[in-house]
Length: 528
Image (cartoon, rainbow, N blue to C red; front, side):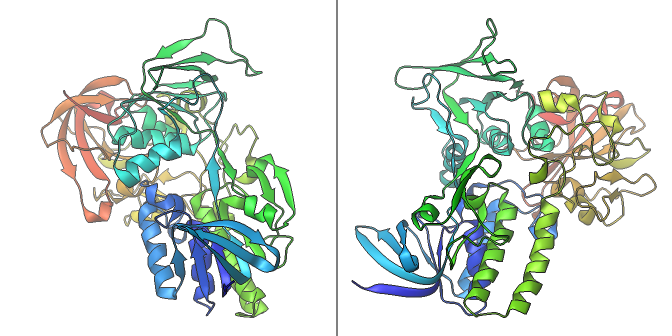
């Protein structure tokens, strides 16, 4: 039996696996990456939204573009990527068994990094196995990889970032998202993600979950019910929706089976997503020469997974003598600082399960946002990005401490300030002059920035808002302005439409409304 050898074998060509491969290969290691899929990049190539973070975290760049960058870097570094290659075993002395087509191949690595990611969880309810019930990630794959509309009328179960992001993408795809439902009493994902869904008119049902999905050979409807503090259904609270699809976004579980097979020490850790390897600070497992990276050792965002992958690649390179301990420590110090900045704010791992009631600045969290998906009109003005000012100025409706600062970098006129702390709430600087370039609006991953002129002098106001739907309305189009809750607030007319390469797929729509609605109108719906 022929056994091919490599310095480093990586299982998984997602964000962490590719990042690890790049770090190792550029230091002279012979690296191969195996992935069971037909396309590399893992989740990145179905993530069409812009990433949070800072420039070093690839903020304001769409996930699939980041995937393209990683593949280009891996190719230039000489990484060998084997696709349609399912790793079916990891054995003693780091022997990796891979099924390719009808054949089984054996490989040995001087070091192995497992970066297999995570799989979607499913919950059981009556009708859970009907055609039309699918994971949110599966719906995202259909839309963004294969151009297939998952359904026409869809109910989303789960209000974490996956449920929120995919709900918005379903709307972009032309689907009618009839409701977003979660058994938890408050929204689990970023408020800005919830807010951009809410202003399109999607209702949120917190403390609700699915009782039954109806249909014979496919989904035809769904009934949800309200639950009490013990997650028991409350009698008489049933609500029915006619739908043809139910998407489920109830978390992820690490795909850690290979690490267990290799004899790595494991633990059940709910805070990290389930059964995960016990690892050192940089992904070292209990078995020498075997490392982990990304979601397989704890669920986080793709930005964190990429940094963890780089760390594992560096540690593996030092383990095999391709860099000195001093070089490793210097590189890890930089990566640690980058990762630490992403693990700050309200959604930091250290805050999971905590009831956060105030921002870092001491501002009360919007209870309406947590319960209904949007900040109420009488709550919004307590945040430092929401100001009144003569003439055109940015209004920043970012109301939670999340690691993100592209808006500050995008504005060359000093209209926006975050400061050195990446999780600080953005401030609209009142003594600055906005030149209407629109870069802040386009750069915001949460679509939470608007350029507002509260009084045009003729009884009207103009609002420039981010718009990522097709077809784009024409200048002069008439329609309705919707509020933060998705309800109609007034008539509106499109007075300018801007698109450009610098905006990276986000168009800027400027609408004219009566001036009394300048701080309320936040979305445009064209007349049918």
